[in-house]
Length: 509
Image 1 (cartoon, rainbow, N blue to C red):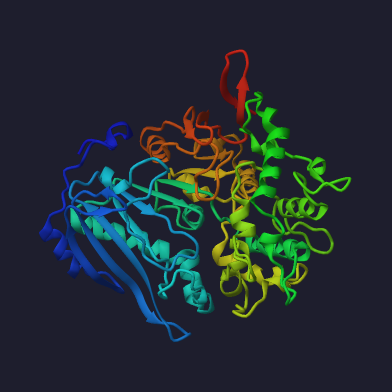
Image 2 (spheres, rainbow, N blue to C red):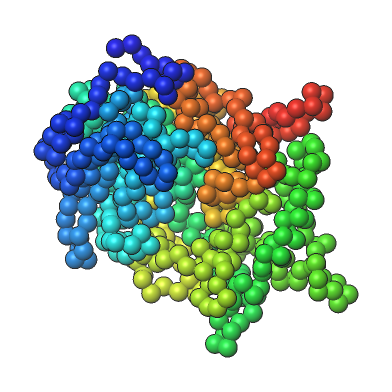
């Protein structure tokens, strides 16, 4: 069969086809420790207002067991296989601590159609546990469930999916791709490091690369705010009474005012947050003023959260966060609760209690986090969850291609952490790094991949072109944002800059 190039991939199909009979027969597919729950042929299906092509949906469960906690566990997955398959496999990354099987439609980069509609076979997984509530992190008390979530379940899912594709279509995938955001981004890095032969191309967006220390940063945020926020009658801090949307607007306007021209053009927006290091002292209320200014405590809290956690000796425990005028700071750190408990994502997260401590402690109080001793209890969890190593030798040797994208406005997971990791990769591979791995930092883009900065880019097409045609992901444009605009995607260490001579945007190092 002739090679299908990336240039024609999204419009072409291979000769392999899925039939209703073939689909139903997959209910009897034999594979070690696998139970097929559903094998159904779907026609005229719509999910989230997206019309899906005729396809076969298989739902299966691997390694079903009763855990040491008495609960039932398995690695659940959903594999959708289109009638007209383009011989490509797409692993749809998870999110948070997973815990449910999301529809395997092939969630693409913002503004682009799901991969299933483009002819890909797509799989998703619950990553080894489904306790009925995706917010239930008690699986962390079960040792195998922790390891399955960390890295084992995604490998099991990828491997069985390829075997089912071979049985259904009579051929293995010609190309395999992974695309994920958040924990899905972490899974992408885990595949490259631990399972380097599973995927030809990986797109890891906003990866929670170092979840253990990321939760230390979350505890730091809680402490910084709790020490300064007004208290209720019981002495409990109320974050929304300390910093509100109007206060945050003052801070973001100051960021814009001080950092607008760092990209070379004064146009009312910041397009190079990476270089922004503002001073907020001008915002401090003086001479009895109470409007359009902030207290010293408010400025200090905002600054300390961005600087990141330290222990009593002043040693860095995570990394700083970028000052980005388009960040999702309020949702992560403040929330909207007008009474205790606070409901910012940092304050309400329970995965630190159950998944990232050793031993787990469901009753742990994040408000009492000890920054000298508690981080040590998270070191063991780093062994199964963190994507720490820069050793991509096997992935590189297998011809893999890795695109990492992180929004500078991500106030939950620091883009600085991703950048520092990528720098260790550059230190290891030198000039060769760009031949197989590239990092793109997007100003004004939040953890959810949207925001005030340009965030619409053809990530899957970029990855396919690199894998299948050897065309490296360069000279592409990102669009969208507020105001709507186009800016070039600049591979790190380059950054977006205005070039007066040509009156155009480019990339500068």
